Image 1 (cartoon, one colour):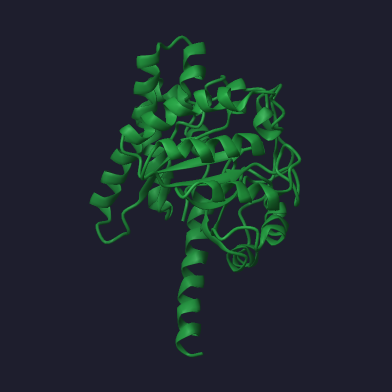
Image 2 (cartoon, one colour):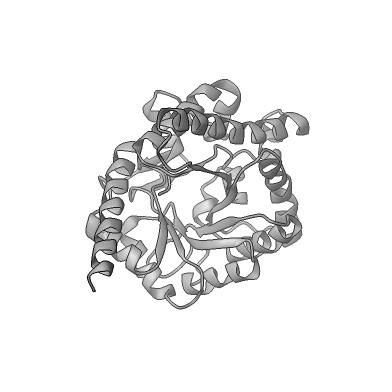
Length: 306
C-alpha cells in the first residue's frame, strides 16, 4: 500500500508549492511539515513513504542557488524525514507492518518545470540524463532509503538510462513507473507494453507500472501490457486532472478516490503495489487501504475453501 500525493497533503496544510522546486523547497523551509505529511499517510494505512526528492535534483537545486554539498544534504534530508516519520508511527502502532521508505527519482523534465514530465519531449542525450540522475541516486542510497521510486518517467529513452544506471549501485531495489497520456502510450508516445520491457534490463527493478496518470486509463494500460513483463505492476494514479505548466496549477475535474471494482480489476491484472499521486490525499488512501485489506481477506477465504 503506497502513500498519496505528498504535495497534495502539504498544500492542504497551507503550504505554497507554486515555485520551481515544488515540495522540495520545504526540505529547507519547513522540514517538519514533510515529516508530518509522511506520518499522516502512515496513519491512513500507507506502507510505503515516497520521499520529497522528486524535484530535488542537484542540478535543479543549483539553479535555485544551492551549492553541491547543500543540494546533496537536502536530498539526504528527504530520506531522514521519512525515516523519522516511520519511527514515530512504529512507536504509535508497534503491531503494524514496518513501513518502507522509497527515495523518489523524478524525471529530467521535472527539473525543467515546464510540464515536460508529461510530454517527454526534451532532447537530452543518454549520457546527459545519466549524469543528471546519478548524484541523486547516490545521495538517497547513502541516506538509507530502502528502495528507489523511479517515477513519472515520460520517455522510454530516460527509462532505459535509469535501468542501466542502477547497475552502478549493487543491491539496489527499485520500481519504475511511467506517466501516460492515454490507455495505450506513455507520454512520449511509446506503447506502454513496449516501455515496460525496459525494466527487464535491470535485476534491481522489482515492479513496473504507471503513476500520475488519469485513473480511467489504468485498466487499459495494464491490460495492454499483460504478458509483456514478468514483473508485477505498481499503480498510483492522480485524481484525473491535467497539469497546466504555464499557470502551475491542476485544471479540470478530478475524481473522489478510486472504486473498489476498479482497484480489484487492477489487482487481477497484476498490480501488487497501489496508491495515489497528485490530488489523492490521506482520506482516499485510508479508503483504498481498507478496500485492499478486505480484498486480501476475501481472497484468503476463497483460497481456503476452493
